[in-house]
Image 1 (cartoon, helix red, strand yellow):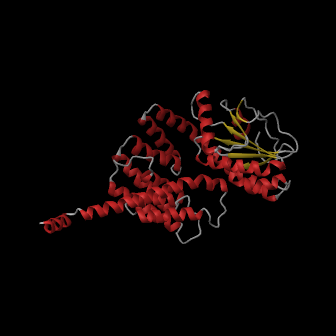
Image 2: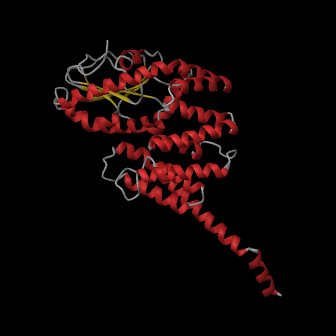
Image 3: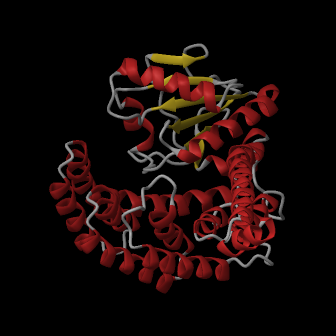
Amino acid sequence: MALQMESQAPPIKVETWLRGEPFASFQPGKVYVVEFWATWCGPCAAAALQLVQLQEKYKDAGLEVVGVAADEDDLSPVEVRAKLGAWLAEKCPDLNYRIAFDPTGEMNKLWREPSFSVGIPTSFVVDRDGHIAFIGHPRQLDEVLPKVLNGSWRASDEAKAADTARIARSGAIAREQALKKPINDRFWAAIKAEDWTMALSAIEEGIALMPDNISFRLAHVHLLLHRMNDMQKGMPVMRQLVRDAIDRNSENWMLAALGQLFSPAHDHSHFPSGERFAMGKKLSEHILALNPPQADGPKFRSYPAVARYYYDSGNKDRAIELLRLALKSLEGPELIPDAQKQHLLPDLLQTLASYKAGRAVAALSSRVRKTFSPRHQSASGRKNT
């Protein structure tokens, strides 16, 4: 049976509680946020900080937050518990809500699968009478939660329209996920076994089935260039990804392509340098054209990636300028949750400091080279004779 707005909330069936008292049942008169997350999920860190703020802000109004980790890596329960504990200590030291660990998959079967919730983080809001009021991304909670707490949300046209759109969108994603699952299973089994030939076969089958799927396209490039170091096959695939990203005029695709070329997580020493920087220049210019420095659009998502290209290409001043614009956009006209700012700010500031230090080193090196240039040495020699 589908799980949607107005549905009775399923039970919380979890045996392992990492933080807070075990949860028994939903109590009438209270509002609950049931949050699904994982340590490998980048946006989940910002969501956790946001939930800490919401729990503190609305605790007197009857809010209780329950976090559920149900998508951890293929490790033993003991290893996962240690990993979860370390993640919580680092990312969310001021945690003020319950955290559960479900290694059985029971919570996914009860909550996420019937609601077609294929991604994380995902928030379920349970109303004061124990019914589902909202299913969606936690970034929407700042707007939705006050209306659930005052009782105006579930009966509103806005809520009904949002849930109808979510079901249509999520249903399509779930159908696509069902098609992708056997391919992904083969791919990840091959990756785990370091059988690159089998992994490549699975990904190429996926691209034949879904040529416009960015996940398959990225996996194809990453496998050839960063796992197999096969420049002969990998560079034509990379070129095609860049062309398609620009033809689509899609920031998501262009950022994905730029990451394959300039992410510090990858070793690019075996890439043909000239072509790598040429593709990076083209992608960066198109991203900046989509979201110009003088426009009000948020810069914190795309500008750090473009700044990396400029830094690596030697234009450190431009890289610093773009990072400053990214930082400035955190305070821009688009409302950004405080939790997301707290998540983004340290990395942006650290990168900016690194770039400034790199510029200083480059300037010093330039002065040293000039000081010890052949002409200067010759002049110095004549002067001293």
